[in-house]
Length: 434
Image 1 (tube, rainbow, N blue to C red):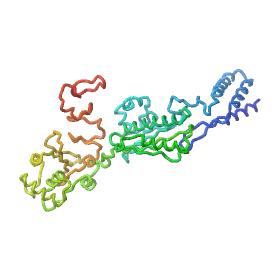
Image 2 (image 1 turned 45 degrees about the vertical axis):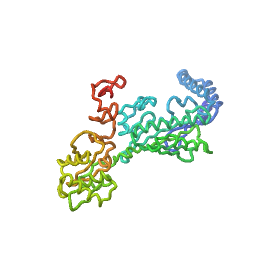
Image 3 (image 1 turned 60 degrees about the horizontal axis):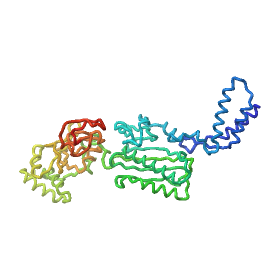
Image 4 (image 1 turned 90 degrees about the vertical axis):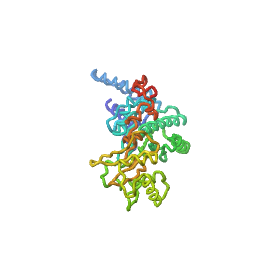
């Protein structure tokens, strides 16, 4: 009898075997054997004549084996796979969490912003983490993010190809929406789908230029699924998303990280540098280039000399902050001058806070004026308020006299009223218009 038990235990080991899938550290179940092997084990356990102390243990084993035999008709026991969850294959990837944010209960794709608060979104972007089956890894040196997700094809019970296409389309639509939530405005999204059965990676780049059209990715996926290649239903597909944040934000080199003598050299692409040696027309040359950007440099100096004489100054006279008002009235523009203090802080000078459709941005460095062509790239921040010129990394974090972070309407500051609380979002609005 003991020899028979040993033989059946070996058969059980051969019947259900664990196999490591590639090098991703996840286990898949490979069913080897048939129903007769399990029924043979049941009969063996029933024939055992053990002492009363081992009865409960044998009964538990008998019930477990019977439950496995009932579902033996399928290639994979359904009891080993929880269809309600993302998949058993995702358990290992979810355990490898990055960052502190691991609360998956607040993740709901049917709610606005996936049920995540603004603080949670900022923390995920900054520190990374695992939420809703997605693992977010920040790439600070490259000003980007990486999102990892594993798709389990076993959750699809329908045998037709349309079920797989619909399932993958829903997954892709969700990952694109989640990526856009983390990327913000102007983010560049690169989606890659790979698997053991795919002959090559399915790759697509979504950006504001193509309006984040998901059809670009699904079309490539359909071409592979309609070819001679097969996607096994018992496999897992790896979905990687690389996000480039602030493609047009210029948040790669912050001006506060540069020493005083490196500001011009490192930001020359974002500046117009007047080359006047024999006079002090740098201020007027910058204004002339702003008004006539296509004029050659040989003509700008003559235009600047005429402009400075019209304002009542000679070509050798330096223009200070007190003289800016005269040029603003003459040209009907608003002039904002940025400069650095002795401690390295960036400050700005302006005569009024009212918004103007023609605003000239200048940088004063060693008594020489430079015209700023790209303010966000020059300062090194994704966003600069066009009213108060405050730098920030997220629009949700800024609020000033002319910018409302509740309604985000550009004309909200024009409607002055009594502050009231919204019954829907419970936030305090500036007026009834807000």
